[in-house]
Image (tube, rainbow, N blue to C red; front, side):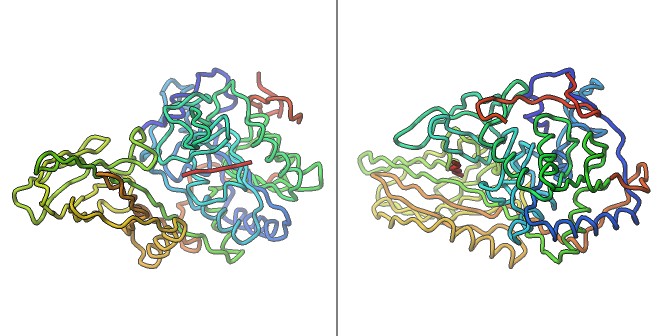
Length: 471
């Protein structure tokens, strides 16, 4: 599946240096640098991490400047590369989850990301400790009240344009906008200001998987040096900032960070994904018959796709007179007619899409139109925590729970949650094949009223030509 963001981005001839050769430190040198980085992290009082596309490549998402990167292939006339799985099902990498572990351990204070893949938020990293300089392909924002809406599907547009949905605040209702920048869009001042503030306060800025070519973002890590801090860079290609860094590591980011976590004796938490659906069972009475409609939708509304569902099989195991059906198109909907006094058992088998950790799950529904079920709302955070603990303990996915049920006149709605993915990371057992490339045997040593646009910085270091989050 092609990456929607790369296809939607406006064409730009000058995107800086692309296709540069990848370099790999020799195993002995790499291990020494990993140990040095671990000591730097351990001694740091204010660690800030600055991330680029290189930390997401092991999840199946191509980078931009690597040998098979988006801009490298475009310059060669080969178009946008394919991801190895749907963008919306990409799981956070070992590095993403290690950053969560470092934050929980109190070592990592802030993350600044140039990525739009939402993997930092998907990993569970705190939103208040994250600046997304170039936006998020899975996030919408209300331009009026600034409420953010994190989706499980990729937003249709980029360039800060209107989307089909509106703010759910009863006192607002403003049309939402996407948050991803196009080339000519200014960096969001709130994100940029918090990023600059954190870099100035940092005694160590760790740059992971970034070529450090896009200004003004690439200059932020250097702000720590002016205040006596240090910069460390982990990247497979040379960057314009290498000479100013205290440590430069040419190695796979996942392998480097796994080594650091091992030395620090820190556990990398597993990634556990939870998805939601909403069931609506509406009925109307016509003489002695009941005409009922079942709809299965996203909790974000009918217009929002259920990206983790391929199809739904609806069957009635105890009723031979009611034929089963397979729902293939979204929004999933089924209409039937039964007698008013009829009660029946309905089984919904949910067939999950590619990228999920299990193929299917099911929901059992006992339908009685003459008897109203009890309404309830369970504490969301507690339910999700119970599901995650169960998935990690059992080392499998497929767990589910009912989050809430609400009875309306002639209708019933319920929200169901499912564990659809579980990825465990063991830093000690990480096996990475020795890469083919060039061995490196020696290391390398605002104004708030202005809107800053992105530029490309060349190898010389000069230009080449309050938060609210709803899920």
